[in-house]
Image (cartoon, rainbow, N blue to C red):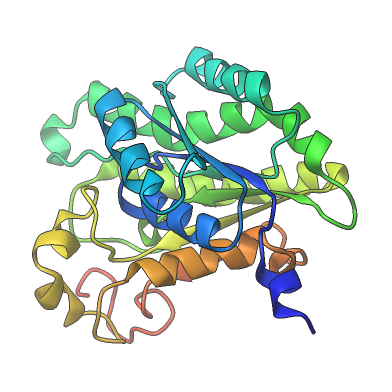
Length: 267
């Protein structure tokens, strides 16, 4: 077996939403190391995009292109797809990573906190995939399918102790949406899967970012995730090695979901 052929992404074009920081940036780094020709990244804030592109340019000059667009609306999803279409005639890999969270006690949980999270975590992945369907189909074949990878969370598979009502609901929803999209898009040689991250350092997971050693004590493998953990899983799913995985979700969490004997609420 040729491992470069199995796991390499030579010449492929990818889009990673929310790719300017955190888990998205880890995935972008992995895709570039695996041989992607170009990786587009999107985020709402232009300054975050510019900083990420400048950072990547030191190692992969000209290979990361930033597109600052708000994906919380259908119009934003379609605008991003149109921008990609101006630059590319096909798209090999789409990673729906952009996300939001909101925590507030049940009694006062606001509609704004519900809508913001559901819009970016559930509506955006669906409508962006829909808007990019033609470009994904143009890249896809039976021998080399296009890939869509949705980034969920283990909070869609188990409870955490915090009152993050819309976040829990959205992350459970994206994992089941992954299955439904997979069942439809496999007909077009587009493979849809998901990753459910656990504790990784990011602005979304401030506990892991600021108190990693303490968080690690509750994880079966006794550490938080590192960039190679996330990048390696994304490369597997995006590459030929993952072509036979359809509609499934991989928990990348050090055993919190499947290796922890404690109840989820106590973990």
